[in-house]
Image 1 (cartoon, rainbow over the protein chains, first blue to last red):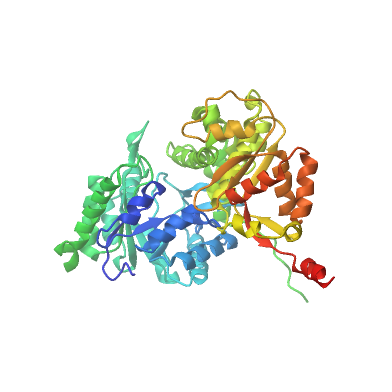
Image 2: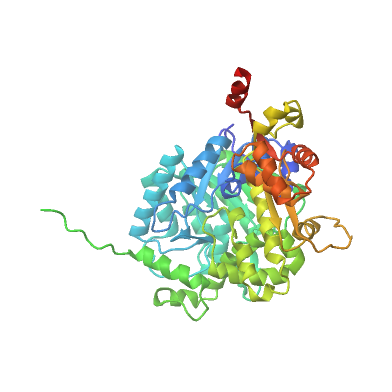
Length: 281
Length: 272
């Protein structure tokens, strides 16, 4: 089953929702997981994923290949990802424009770096190695930003477009990350979304964010623990109107509501994908 | 003539990542020059907090009985100290904290709960059982129909998900199982050594108390010794052991994954 035949909306899969996901019969629904949570030899987790995969498409959204580290992806980790991909046959595989492994330590976050020519060359090489190991094209996601980093030689949209051109990868546009980064670093979210190379977009992410407890609106955090905010929906509608429908995921990792509440957000995204405006673009 | 090797020089990206990674776990004032300006931004705390929270959340998830015994606030503080000493080595966070029991054993604030490290060991064995390869358990009937000589020379291999441990230090199994149960037993705790067996014959991990002889028998089986040898080891460890009821309990629990019959021994006997 392909997500690209008719791009539809999916939901991040949490263990709390295994039963509901298995029983879900919404048209076009699909689910996404972090592959790192399923890199086990056996057991009920893998059993659930395989059972859900038998009914719905699954996307693998990696958080740990550390493609922006100044090092090759860990060979053992890449082999585990390839093995899981053979087992699950995912509709999509994605990763982040970030680093998280460094000199033998895993730092559980998506860390920033200066977008330089050297970094681009390294990431192109790492993405190519990953695509070779998996035997498929992957999508790379724009991260959320908090820090004003010195030393950027590239604008992020140009950097991602060039990465896609050189490596042949696709892109995953996280619209909430655009909103969060634009608020934190004072750039235009609309201009970012408008400039994003639509032809490369294989998937779109929507998530909720929170305000920093001390700094409030001056620092938004990509927390995935709240409903998708209205400004993010507006950016999403603007994007889909321009580039047409793309597989879209509602991400929710914390402060989980009932499955039905998440499905309502998923259905709203599905509505945007099916809107005449999106189809016409 | 041969090429002169250039000394390896870390590039700018690697230097940035060295400094950034160091700053994540360092005290706020300490970051090196390369990232001092970054670490001074209030937003740097988002990365510090996310990385540390990721480590702590993983330990809290991996050690539920320890959390019940200490309270979550206490464990989060201990986990923060552990995480600064030993960040995860792999992104499979289910594996994180494999030596957390050893950390608790030398962690002074945990000294008033001397059984805590052993309870952590059982939490770790649970995770190992939970993620082990799947395997069909040996059916009790497959063993019951063997003749006594065939049984003594057979090898019963422990199930891939079976884990067991004997604790001389006290009723660790009772403490642990009460702190994993939704409705724990209220019976008085008898302070005596105990053993535990964790199995996953189907989907979910199950557990039961195991005698010292049972642990010795499974140790011998895991070494590939015959059931006759293993029974000898079990009786040596626990002379009053009821071997028949032990075997029946282990088989019913699904503790074995494979039965190897010693055809050579059998054919020898037949040729006499």
